[in-house]
Amino acid sequence: MMPQTKRLLAEEVRKVKKTAKQSRFDGFFVHYVPGEKIDKHAFVVSKKIAKTAVERNTIRRKLYHAAARESFAPGKYVWTLTKPYTENIVKIARDTFSNNVQ
Image 1 (tube, one colour):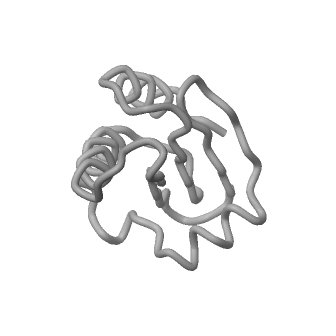
Image 2 (cartoon, rainbow, N blue to C red; image 1 turned 90 degrees about the vertical axis):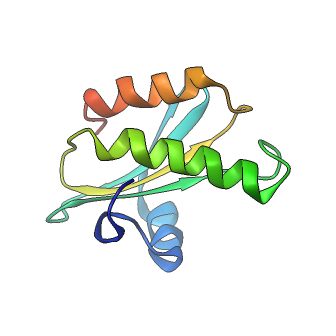
């Protein structure tokens, strides 16, 4: 799991979504604000993707786990799922993380 110091708070997520550049990918999109000292992440999983909180939190944990093992350019990242969760999304996320999305 990613340490708390590398996760965004709810108010930070709102600020990032308002000011960030947005990139679309198959199954999710990313809001990114460059220029911080470290990389910080948040994952958004709506009820449209997973109905119960248990399912949403499980998906979020898997994505945090995938992100914790990769290195990124310093900045703030908000990852939003746009398609129902499958194992492929974790694979796409890993591939994206390793390419240092900017």
